Amino acid sequence: MESTSTLFPQQQDDSSVNSDCESGVSGTTILQLNIPDSFLLRIGESDVVHNLLKTRFLRGLGLLGAQTQILAIHRNACSDFVSQARLQSFHVYAEAVSKLRAGNANVRYAWYGTSGENDVNDIVSHGFSHVHGHNLCLSPDDSPLQSVKRCVVGRDGMRHLILCRVILGRTEIVQDDTKQCYPSCEDYDSGVDSFAAPTKYMIWSSRMNTHVWPAYVISFRVPSFKEIEKTEEEHVRPSSPWLPFPTLISVLSKVLPPLDISLISKFYKAKKERKISRHELIQKVRQIAGDKLLISVIKSYRAK
Image 1 (cartoon, rainbow, N blue to C red):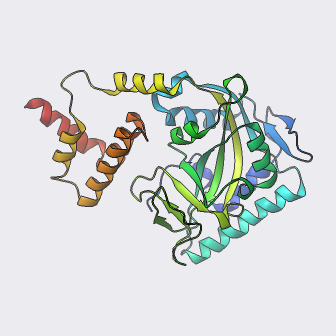
Image 2 (image 1 turned 90 degrees about the horizontal axis):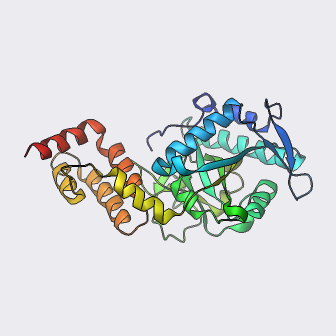
Image 3 (image 1 turned 30 degrees about the vertical axis):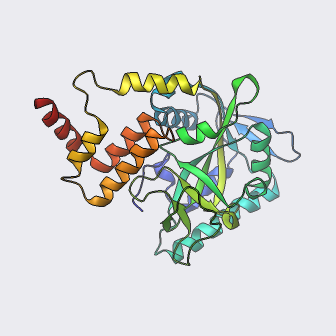
């Protein structure tokens, strides 16, 4: 699986996960949850981590980012022995997967959309597996929109998103409606919906509490998604002339490999079925085809 950009480049080394348990964060205050011995650290707005998380999150939302209000960002404080043991377990499994996969544990950041404050409390206190089924579905760190849409709106329109560290290891293609709850064979560790431009990471039920670490919680408000999708349609479309996606796919099919065209067609179908936004579709096409080729195709079309 090709590497995607990560939130903190300096944390590529698996050993850096120790920083997730540090409490000495500048400009922070301790917020105690409604569950005994469970804590989060609120990260101050002047903290560099707050700025990195906020920027990455809002940028990944596209046009929706400008209308999103960040209310608070918290760090998992690992304040009790059980949390510390869970983080240590994450370390151990990351090292094990690294040895198994030629030195590459493929540890990434990924978003999870929660069902509210109680869900956040349960996950931070007990992990993921007590509230989920066959697999855990997360979004890549540069594409949070699908996880945002899965968030349940709470009091005062508030939503909570968890940024996790995830051990992907070697990935395999898995269908969206899969009932699979473990790898198809010993050669794989997790599932994705695409190798070239994944929009989903799937962690099996047997590995939810060992391969996923809930590192940060972002609390935010967003406007109506119906209004946002309408706004995206109005702003993303070029003024003149407009290049329809079927035409674009037809032109690209002459220069791109069949697998790439199949992926683009899959994302276009997902957009028509309103499973992804137009912004997400364009981002995926850019990742697959590259801006240089797309600009060339559009200029050629306009010249006709």
